[in-house]
Length: 282
Image (cartoon, rainbow, N blue to C red):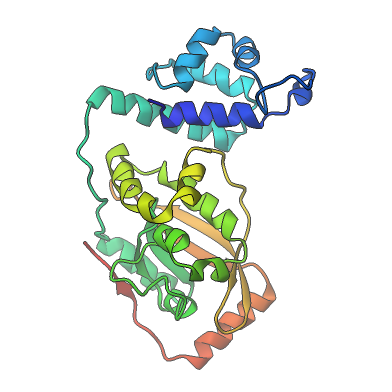
C-alpha cells in the first residue's frame, strides 16, 4: 500500500527532466522523469530501498535518507518542508496502528474571533487545512455574498471548490485553487482527521481531487483571482496567521492586489448595510 511519502517521491521523480541533471533524455525511457536507478544513485541509496519507500513498504526512513532524497530531487525549501511533514505523518501512522476516523473540531477560540473583530473592515476569515470556513469578518461575508460558499450551515472551501459548479466561474484560475486545496489537506494536524475528510469528499469530487492528492507538488504562490457576481474581477494577495497548533486553524487575510480590487470592495461596502461577524462553531 502506497503512502503520501512514497507518492510524493514518485511525483517529484517523474517531473524532473533528465537533461537538466546532465543525463541523456533518450527515446527509450519508459518513465517521464528520472528512473529509480538514477535517483537512487544520486541519493546514495539502493534501488531496492528506494522501491520500498515509494511503495510504502518502509515507513521509517531516517532523516539522513530523507535529506539525501531531497538533495537528489533538487527540492526547494517549501517542498523540503512538505517532504519532512509527509515523513512525520507516514511514520506516525505506522506507529499508532489503525486509527478511528474523526472530523476536525469546528470550535473557534474567543481570541480568534476577537482578532477578526480587530481586523474589520478587512476581508478575513478563520479556516483550517481542510477548508472549513469557521468565522469571518463582515466584509468577507459581503464579498462572498451570492457566491454559494457561505450557503451551507457548515461552509467549507475545499468542498465548494470541488463540488459546486459555481466555483469554476467564481475562481479566475480554478485549477490553481483546486491544487492548493488538495495540497493543504495533507497539512492537517492529524492523519485520521485528514483521512476522514478525504473519505467524505472523494465520492463527490472524484478524479479532480484524487489525482491532485497523489501529486504532492507544492502549488506556486500567486494572487487569488475572483470573478464577483457584481461583475468585478477581484485579485487578492493572501496573508496567513497560524493559530496555536492545538487549534489547527489559521486566520487568512485577503489584501487587495490592485487598485481596481480596492475600489470595487469599497463600492460593495458602500452599497451594503453593515453585517455582523458570524462564527460557526462545532
